[in-house]
Amino acid sequence: MLQRIQTIWILLSVLAAAFLYITGQDVDVFGKTPIISISSIVLVLVGALSLFSFKNRKRQILLNNISIIINALLIGVLVYWMQNLSGGIDFPEKGIEPVFPLIAVICLFLANIFIKKDERLVKSVDRLR
Image 1 (cartoon, one colour):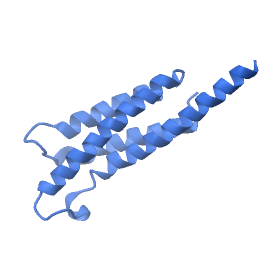
Image 2 (image 1 turned 120 degrees about the vertical axis):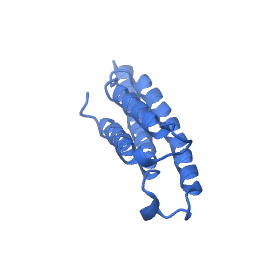
Image 3 (image 1 turned 90 degrees about the vertical axis):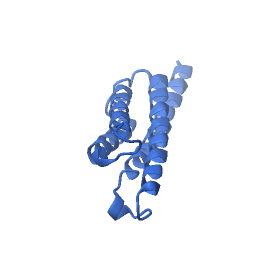
């Protein structure tokens, strides 16, 4: 059922990863290794897989937790990158790249909450039968 509220939250996290891929093209954290681009592509793929595994809620929660871990690592890498740039942390001058993984983490937490609510509802209906 793609019309559930957690689908919207997962879709928003996938969009945040896509925006990170678009805006993170100029980020050089560890030389020429495209860490941000590769991790953004992985996040989009894991999010799409989570989006379409709506029949298996346990797998959906697991994929969301994997995405949360990857996003948390990305936040750390991007904050490290911003600290090493000259001038300190000024968002208008440095970019908004760390905001996108933070948005994705919040959306995935909310999606997990609603998935767990659905799981409890299904279990309560099964008890009544």
